[in-house]
Image 1 (cartoon, rainbow, N blue to C red):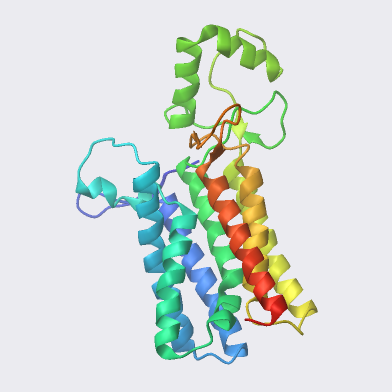
Image 2: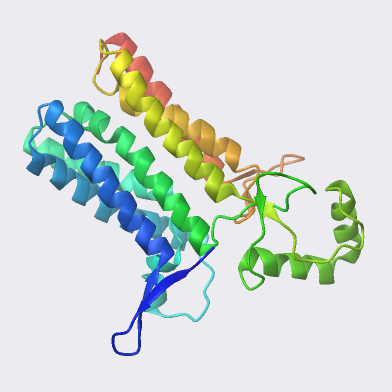
Length: 290
């Protein structure tokens, strides 16, 4: 984890945030890939660039709005804090929803094939979001639960970030509960913070890179397919992976439980919505509706 990579000696110092850098890398890499694929699909470079810029700007607005509406906890307060996307606080599914609406409106207005353009951008989405997850790792957000003793996919994080602070709070406020948790994870009952947590950011990034590679491979293997199929594959792969990884994340609360069912995390509910959209779209393609 390294929130600030470098401070440019301008004025009082201009910090380069790791999160923001990887978001930019995700945008550039995804757009370059889409431009190359768009040309092969018969789209002009200008049309692909327009879609890339529209989807990115609207995606950031939607992702930030979803975060502010559902998970935002004020720190210092004020309007500038609402805009501080370089410090984290983006909900991907919220960004995907708004970007789809904006791109749909643009493509409809330009009379361009919508499903075909979505296929062009599907691998770029996976690649760009994967790089964004590396930004989450640098920032320390989207963290995982405390990992069992000896787990090979866990990491230690600095004590000052929120997941470590929550460990200290649990340790001090609920000693009996902490001791029980330690025993269940294979640690001594009197073990004190800080403990390694699941590297959910890194696991998510690797999974997304595999999705991007898988989409490119599947697209070449199944050339005789309907427009929209590649984006449907993305919805299925991402939705399924996101639903699973949320069981190991610990940055958002469970929601909408009832009875003995404690609920799911927001990311899981939205992942289920993505899977449902993908299923409906797939059935429409099977019926020939497009």
